[in-house]
Length: 465
Length: 48
Image 1 (cartoon, rainbow over the protein chains, first blue to last red):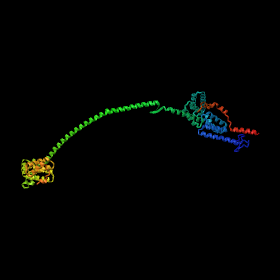
Image 2 (image 1 turned 90 degrees about the vertical axis):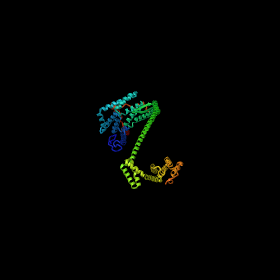
Image 3 (image 1 turned 90 degrees about the horizontal axis):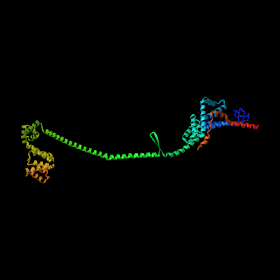
Image 4 (image 1 turned 180 degrees about the horizontal axis):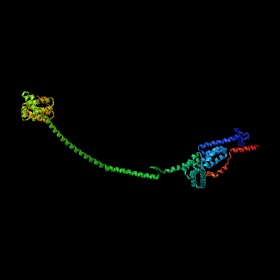
């Protein structure tokens, strides 16, 4: 290090041994200059360009040969759009340190290699200065036009942006002002003027929004498809009233429709249903009558067929009847009247020829007592066993052959069997016939008792043989 | 509240290219080391 007074080499000593100058103080000044440079560099790195410029200016006020700080100061000016100031700093830097100043050489070389840049910057500066003149003359509209041109050419010119924002604030275009201030705060984040304007805009927007909210109470906004409809409250209420009226009309229409349905349609439907039901019932009745008629016809057919079947069943075939007749004849000839009577009852007289019928009649006449006796005995057996239906069948056969068999005993027992089965009419008919035929014997007397007193206490044991 | 007129006074015309040389020449480049130099010179003169 050289002495700032005599230029002698001083090394690390605090005093120049040649001239006695205070080297320590000189070193402290230079050190302070570099401290400010470091501050400026840190601020520039965080885009606090205003702060960096102030720090770098301070650095250069301490030590003007701090070319690093000067080059950085020029770069900061260039960043905020002040191209001429930047060039001045780099030119000064080059003049103060011609050798070993590569940054200044590079920056100046770039400017020289791009002559259009300089003319453009000059044009921008002229317009900016013109805008200031317009502002001071009160022509804010012209000033705004010029400033917009300036910003379009040099968006980083902070001062132009700030002035335009100021004009917007003055014209109460706070949103536009905020937009510009927001943009330049990204270039120079800690510019006090910008910050002050932003606060101003915020305050005014806040106040404006408060007033607008009061106004907005009278405004109704709603979405209609992709469109947003804004209406005054009065118009909206009117529309709602119209909507209410429409709704009421629809409601009234529904009510009238329901009433018409209830008083006109429903009775008709009911009538149709009743008519339909009546027709259905009549049709069903007709079908039932037809079915009954058919059923009766079918039943008659069944009866006829059953009768035919019975007749067929009762009929024995002719050979069998003749065989039974011959067997009966042979057994009777052998003296077995009982066996003969059993065979002759198996003979079907209808299928026999004339000769067979004659033989049958003569043999049957001879075997009748045996046959009757068999039926009578069977009837008595059934009567004793209280099987009155079978008893009636046997006694009826006996009575059909000989009504007076056993002095009216068969007839009486037939009547009594009827009495015991509850067939009083048939019983009385039998009893009357017994009384008529044998009024004096026990069957006639007992029958008379039944007829007179309808005495039912006489048991079969009392009247049986 | 910002006073527009007062605020407007803070805006000064920017240096144009034509004015750059004059601006450089007009620049007072005196720094603290110059002051120290002058003070030391004066001090030495006074001592003599």
